[in-house]
Length: 216
Length: 248
Image 1 (cartoon, each protein chain N blue to C red):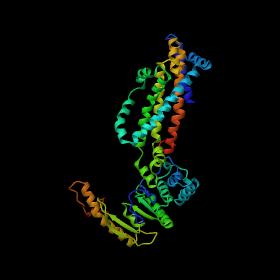
Image 2 (image 1 turned 90 degrees about the vertical axis):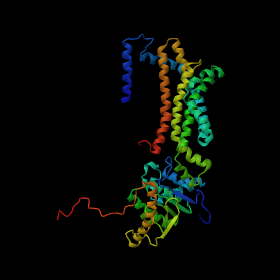
Image 3 (image 1 turned 45 degrees about the vertical axis):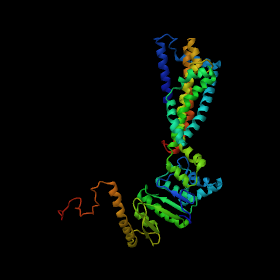
Image 4 (image 1 turned 45 degrees about the horizontal axis):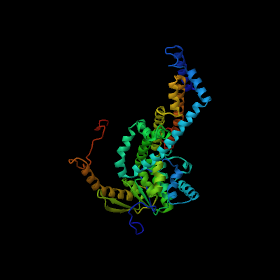
């Protein structure tokens, strides 16, 4: 449901950012951002100005004329975000957009996304398997059950930004979500793995060097 | 430079073998004679007329094949029933060397311009069809989904996303078709009277003018690879570079 209308298919008021940036390799970054604007019939100048504005927002002005293969994974994802935002959608849908990025780039883009959100105040629906990511970014977290997916539980994150995940309150929420997910993880594993599989709780393991105090 | 001296060396070896007189000169002419024949043919216009006639046939046959191949490829890519019915036929036709049609086209169209153009067309059209269809089929669904979320649909989706995405493979199809049509043209011209390169070749053989035969062969090779290198290879490499498929 979006503004009282049920959502049945793709539409320009709800643009998706995919896991792989899904940029068109035959277009430059600038032209990629312009793509959606062209489809909605904006004039050439308007398109160009708008695309440049949003490339600037994701700090890629210098790479406007680069082709996607010349950009790093993080830069490509930035272009994809700019491309989605340029459409000025009511809702921004993000489907595991940072899952394929390395941890450092991801952390950087988390801050970036928070800043963009603060600036544009768009509603963002963000799908992720990464609980930390969810706790760091969201105001409201919906935990989905394994197939068939339904909303299993809802969490609210009443913390200000920027967030520090080592804060006890946030760490507590993260732990609760993990527990809520544990059942689902087991269900999936039981469906996929051999029938003799059981979720083993961690036992006390000896230290890897088998040092029993001989160095005292 | 390295390449140039290599080819010079080849010509020198050729001349050396010629000087050994292992075969009579009317069977194995030297490079100087072939060069002289080439210059002579170009000077009196025979070869130029032949090149023009051959290129005209190629242009018409290949042009028709392009138009027809693109539309048929499109149809097969978009329409499941068409693909099921015509797909096997197209791959079957692709396996037939187009010169095999010559007896039929000669009966239907006579030993005429039209008959050779038909052979050229049949040589080129199938690989254009197959690669157009495959190119469109192989467009990643993710790009289409992404374009659809940005409001592209119908013919705009097709021209803005599907066609550019399919272009690299379509280009290889065109290039392949060029090579096929060039071969088909030569075969057709060898077997019919007229004023193309193939016909000059057969006439030269009939009057035992081996240098002229070789001169025509040189021209065929040079023109075929010129078009391939200047047009198709360049276009293909440019797309590959743009897409990041080749080292920049």
